[in-house]
Image (tube, rainbow, N blue to C red):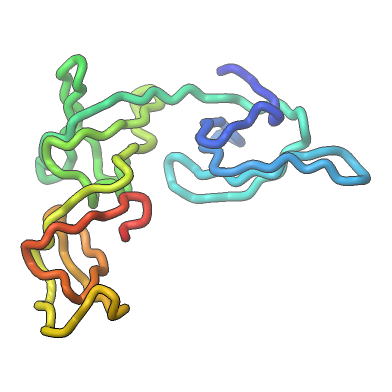
Length: 183
């Protein structure tokens, strides 16, 4: 693994810190009036999803990790795992739900996703910024409810995920969901 200095950090970069595979969420170089410069970082553990703040001395060496990104097509859920197919080699890969995390709530069959792989381990999934899904279950809308009314109700989507939607949304309606926030 190549060693880099903390002066070369970039958002989204993967590192190995204290034996953990982490991704840089945010960083800030700080040069106080007295004392040495340092780099304040926010790191996300790629395996557990835990976010921690860590401070490094400026110029300190850290191990950079190469994470391969492979475009895969989601085929189906076989009951225990999600089955993906590599779009280049047509090789199929079984992925446990824990590796996908909340991204599993927005996967539709035949949809493309980019799997982040560290060796043979899947450490993350890049989905499109938003997806359109059909509402399969929700309470019926009441006459007079409007989108600007400010109210919301729970709705179950075709993937099984539950989100809050405006009161005017009914069963069979398609909603656009942000994959980052679930809104």
